[in-house]
Length: 154
Image (cartoon, helix red, strand yellow):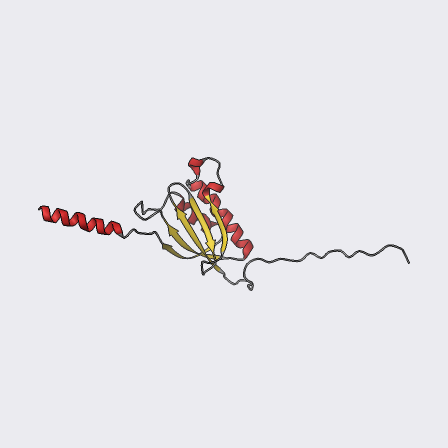
């Protein structure tokens, strides 16, 4: 017998992230894309919207401040989001597209279309696409007041 103690080799534990799925099963997440004229945010949550899985912006991908909202930065951010979603086991995404809204512009910024296209081209299946821009209700009241003033003046 030798005087050496036997050391146990540590076993590598396989850590899986995300939901437990079978092979070929489609697991959905929700991609909240906020495209303003200053930046593009891509925020992926579970279906309930409570748990954040991935959150990447265009500003995290480029160095210059003027390029944060560019389609190229949005494409790079969307590719990173798709890669991280695949690691977590998410294979399909519902899209909620949002612009600045309120009393500002209701049209999405330049990075919205390229982010959506990059998600689709990177192998993610796309479920439903919806536009969820906030609309300021007070602007409609202002419109009615202007309309009333023009009618009274005539």
